[in-house]
Structure formats: C-alpha cells, structure tokens
Image 1 (spheres, rainbow, N blue to C red):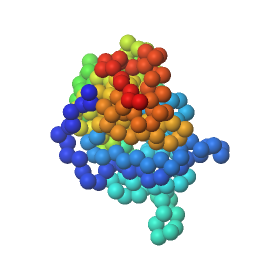
Image 2: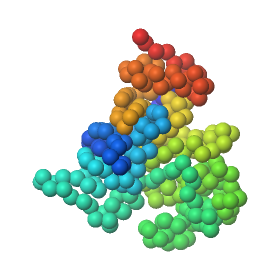
Image 3: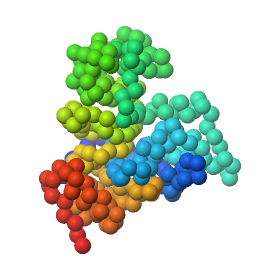
Length: 279
C-alpha cells in the first residue's frame, strides 16, 4: 500500500517539470522525448532496467548533464538551456548554481570528503556556500545527524563509518542546504544487504515529513509503499506513470509487466502484497 499523503500542500506549480527532454551521448540517444512532472510534496520513484536512462534523467534535473533538446522548469521557470522568443538561452553559471543549491542529490557512491568528519562534511556547504555562521551550521548539522541516527558519530571520519552510516551522512549533508527537492540516485545500490534498511528508514521518514523526492531505485518494496507515483522507464523513454497500487498490480504496458515479473522471479521484491497482473 502506498504511503498516506503528507499534510504538505501540493502547489499548483510543480517543483520540477520536464518538457520533452532529449539527451544523447556520442550519437546514442539516452533520453527520448521525456516529459515528467514532480509536484511539491510528492515522492516520485523511477524504476526500470539498467540502461533505461534513469540516472541520466536525475543528472539532467540537476544540470550535471546538459540536455540536447526540451525544457526543464524549476518552480515554473525555465532553467539551464531553453528557448525564449525563438532564441536559445543558456543560463550563466551563477544562475545554474543558484538553482542547484535548491536541489539536494544523494548518489550511489557516498562522495564524502575523506579528510572531514561527519560533522565537517555536513557543515562545509552551509558555511562556505551559503555563508551560514559556523556555530549555527554546527547546531544544524548536529540536529541532522540526530535525525539520521548518527549524532554519536559526529566526530568520526568516513573511513570509520559503515557504508550505511556514510550514506546517511550524505543524506544529512544534502539536507543541510534546506533543498526544495531531493534527488536519490540508487542510494542503496552500493550497500551490503543488511545496511540497506537503515538508509531506507531515513528516506521513509523524509517522505512522511512531506519532502519532495525524485528517487531512482531498484527497491520495489520502497517504491510500492512510499511513492505517490511510480514511473517506469525503458530505452530512454517513460513507458508508464501512475500510482504504485496500479503500476504494481495492473500495469498497462506489457513491458512494465514483463519487468516486474522478472524482478519477482528473481526474488528482488517483497512478495507481500502479491502482484496480480490483469490480462
């Protein structure tokens, strides 16, 4: 069963809207005419096979990759590269950084600074990017470490933390910038199975608090239980987009049905409740 809707009001203007996005690498199309809307306060999970373009889509949202065609809107305003009056506009780096500062991203690899403690990793951006006073940044960082269950490890360096702990610090670091949107790119894929749950618990907590999240995941149980919408991608295109109870029980696309059945046959999804496919 999907999560109950949060009490956060859903604005008429979505946080992010992708309008017919195209992206290629060396002549090979990776994203093909992708349109997607992420309303404020919603959790949207993207699932699909490897090579479907899921991670590239997230990187385009954060402008870590530049799109070839289409328009990305952030809070209703076109950003990065777009057409205005029939002419191509490329936002200056300063504008791009302003938008990116409002988007938190958690990667597959933890990407923590090895020479900084957990506390130092979290305070780095608020102090040096936003100009937050160090004492205030420290208090906020400790509160975030408490939130992810790691207040006692504030002085630990990354090499002294487990993979699950490092990823929770990475989540806290992203939250320290008070983002309007959180992007998760397979945040549990680099973890040992016994450590996956501790990261998913933090992500579930963020969802219940109304955090707007765009999540690429292979954790089908998480997508089914937490998402407001599930998007299935294949070969660079959005094949299916709908509430999890429909996508997981009565998918409209044969390709979605095939993918989910394969996942179930591999035992990679929680079999409860059972997935039932209509003919």
